[in-house]
Length: 329
Image (cartoon, rainbow, N blue to C red):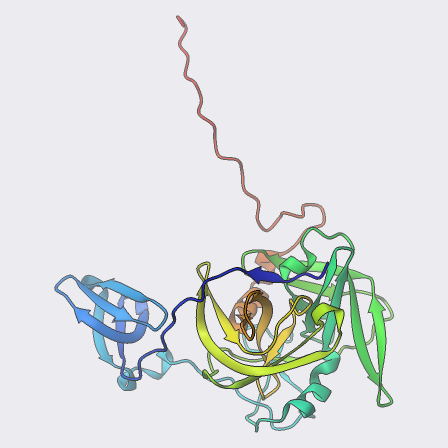
C-alpha cells in the first residue's frame, strides 16, 4: 500500500497579507506584522493574512508602518548559488549537517535542475508501502515523512547513482531511524552500509522567501513510478490545516510522493510533500522547509531509540480517581 496522507477537507479561506500593513512591536522584543483593523482602549486587532490576532494594549510598545520596521523583523531571503558546480556551504546554525546556497544566482529551468538534483532524491521502501525522501548531506542522512516509516521495522532506500552518464539503481538495506517528529510528520534516516559512497545531496532553501505564484516542482515516486517530476506554482504559503500552516501547490502530489522534496527554480528544497485533497486536482500540500530546519537543528531532542521506540513522545496515563477511605469505613 502506497502511503500518503489524504485530506478530506473543505478548502479553507485564506487571504494574502495586505500590501499596506503595520508592525506592532511587543514586549520581550517580539513583533507582529499585518493590517491593523481597529485600535481599542484595551486591545489592538491585527489581520496577519491567515488569521486575526487580538493583542492586549499593555503588550504593545510601538506601532509603525511596515516600511519603517527594523530590518531584523523582516524575513531574509536565502542566498543563491551561482552555478551547479559550486560546492554548497553549511548553514551557520547547524555547521556541516545540511547545506544552503552560499552565493546568489539565476533561476534555471526544470530540465537542468532535475539532472542536477535527481540523484539526491530517493525512494523509501517498507513492508507496508513506499514513499520518497531526499539526502541532505554526503554521509547519507535523509529526510522523509514520519507516516512513511511509522510502525515499520524494516526500511530500505533506493538511490539512483549517476555513473558514466547512466543511472544505476542501488538499494541500501542498512537504514537507521535517527530522529522523528510525529506531529510535524518528519523523520530523519541514515544509510549506514559499509560500502556506501559519498552521496549527492540537496541544498535547503527558505519557504519564507517564496512569493505566491512562483514556479515550484516536485520529484518523487507517485504510485511507485520513481523519479517522476511534476511542476506547478505556489498557490499559497499560509494554508491552515489542523492548526498547522502548509504550502499549497498545483504541482501534482500522489501516493508515493510523501516525504519527497518540493523545489524552487534555484534548486533549493522549500518544502516536504506530504498530503493532497483526494476529491480535487492540483491541491497538493507540503511542510514548509523552516519546520525541517528546526527539526534538524534540534534533532537531538527528537532522537529515536531502538530500545524505546516512543522515546521522543512518551506520555503517562492520566491519574485515576483515588477513593479516600477512613479507619471507621
